[in-house]
Image 1: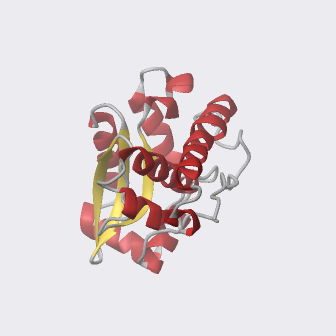
Image 2: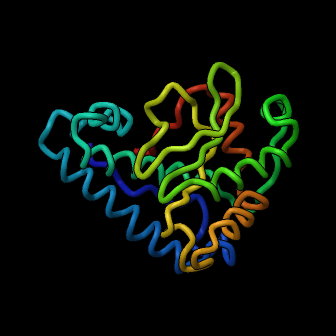
Image 3: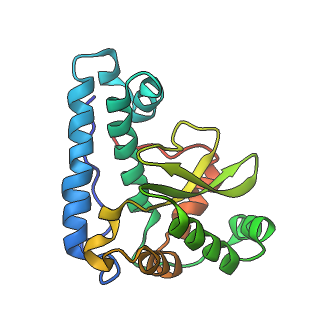
Length: 203
C-alpha cells in the first residue's frame, strides 16, 4: 500500500485571508507531501508497506523515530485539514452538551484552545479529544500524534510556525483567533465523537 497525499476537502484559497492560498501551497503541497513521500520511501519493501497508516505509526513509535515522525506528521496534517472548514459553524447535539459539561460553554472552550495554543512552547499540536466520554484539550510536541493513543481526537490545530508564518508572521495568537473563532469544522468533530474511534487516514 502506497499512501497518497489526500485531496483537500476545499479549495486552496477557501480559508483565505486567515490561511492564504500561498500558505496552503507550501504547507499542504510541499510540507505534507514531503512527509508522505518520506514515509512511503521508508516502508517500501517492508512488512509495513501494506499496512494502514495507524499501524505504521504504532509500529514505529519508540522504534524508528524517522519513520514515526513522517507517518505521524502525515496523519496529523490530513486530520488538520479536515479540522478546518471555510464555513466554521458550531457544535450541536451530544457534542455541544459534552463541551458544556467539560468547559462550561463553547466560548470557554475556544478561549482555552487559544490559550493552550499560544502557550505551547515551540512546535506541536493542540487537540480537542475525548476519552471515556469526557472531553479534554491535549497537546503533543513536534511530530507526536494522538492517532495511536488512548484518546479519540476530535479536532486539531497545528501550531508549527509554517502553519501561520506567511500570513501572521510571529503572531501565533492572531492565527489562533482566526481559526478557533471561525474556521473549526464542528461537523467533523461531531462525526469523530459519534464514531468513538480514531479517524482513519484516507487511502
